[in-house]
Length: 347
Image (cartoon, rainbow, N blue to C red; front, side, top):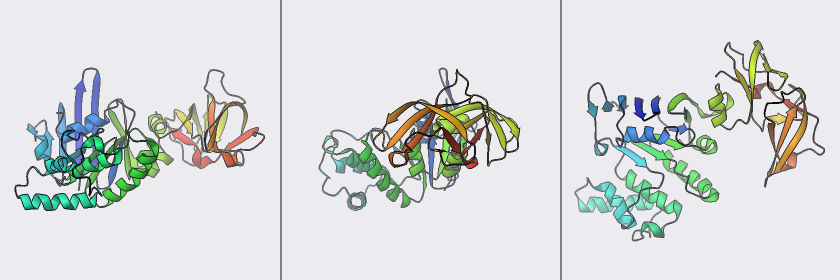
């Protein structure tokens, strides 16, 4: 299975430029609200038309501006789960799902496929319920059922957990992963949550201000985001302007310190990032003299802010996050950073 997208679209002052390929598994589109993630899905689904470019799914051209090809949504075989699930409010669960089988003329076959999907998604007993009678998780499964009975070649999920409370969101992520493991085709997942992207996706494409600028294996992206935008979207809190000193040493200019890195430094280094969980008073490398400025107690963690001894006055305080059972008392006068956790950044 494969999807190739190379499109551009202008909406007033906003410009979308999305170029990527998939090769199976779940590809996450990670970015802040308004960066163009949902618009990319709508262009693939045929709901919106790009100004230029092409979209090819499993060798079928869905859109090509040069060849004047623009297949209508119903011919694209693309399943699109909207943020609000888009269930018909006056229809029952059964009727909503049957809308996905509009193409099937054999009534007996329709009923057979309906029973199979109801069983598969654990919806038996809810056939006569209206959408307002369903929980958030049930509504999501009904929307998925309506999509899957149409046998899509590509499944696209637009912020599928954003409207759910934290407990239900975590539960449904397990259920969704189990379901998607049985869907042997490509999946695109739009999210602004780094945790959701990490849990769900084998690869992540980072989007910012309409531009898709990085596609990597999920663990590789978090371990080495390369750019400040990618580091920020994957949860990095601490940034300083930086310059290269040698192949494995840099100066963090805002913090007034030098750091050793595991990653070899390239020319063009502009910044360095340190994740808030990566600081450790017991780490012997990259020792920093610190003084703490603020602290915030959370249910299971402490978030502490501090400044380095030689830090520039105009630069922001740094963050340190630590679980409650590991918080030292008194607070340390120095923190260390393992060289593997120093993130060189190049934009």
